[in-house]
Length: 328
Image 1 (cartoon, rainbow, N blue to C red):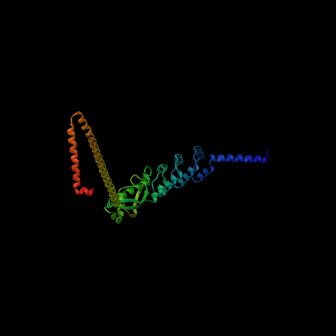
Image 2: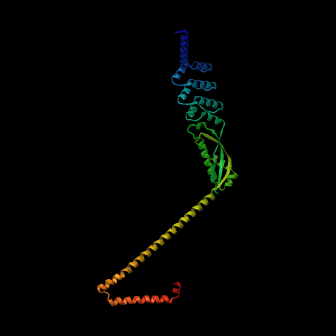
Image 3: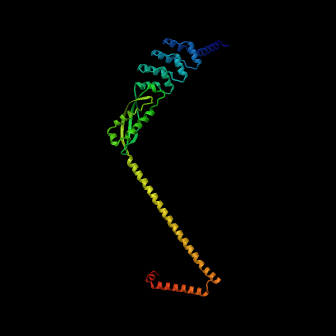
């Protein structure tokens, strides 16, 4: 084999062996920890590799914590990492709390982080309160006028209630409910426009931050506008509804009258049909009476004479009546 090839092969093997060795034995990280005054054995770093823990994500935050004067141990950070937490964020939050004289222990910070909340942001909100702006809340006063209110709520994170406490959505919902209650209890919308601070006083007096992860410092009314005349609109709609009901009832009565008229006409037609049917039975009855001897021929002739005399009298009466002649 060519000596040059042998040398290149040996160099490649050495590089591979060195890379494998450095991946298992993070020498540079160990030296950095020793130089920072954080004694960590090389065996501990190798054990982290075997436990599938990235040593730099434990050692670097530990160095930062020791430099800040926090008495954290490598086992605390590693256990939090294995639980799925963000070690660097927890350490940063502890350092920020230490600088701001906020009582925060590692166990509580780890619990807040594992609960899904940003513990560093919570510490920052404890130092620098946050302003939450509510959407426009529409409420109606007793005089029926709609009032639109927008508020700004200044809150501070409550470290003790971050685990299990409600979030910003609950604060916004409770403030909106307080605004609706206050405006709805006002006799006139003018009272709200003249004294918008009564909304702040009423809402603050309800203790809306109970059970939440925040502490409400102040509620400021940013904007108050007059909306629609809801009372007049409702009265108009009620009048329109009453009108439609009256029209429906009138139409119902008309339909019933038409139905009754049709029924009476049907009864008249039925009665006429029965009369015609009865009249058609008279000749048959007379023929049967003649046949059976119950009616004599002279009686029949007298009956015909009476009918003829009646028809003649009727004709003469019509001829002598001028009104009938004009009609004809």
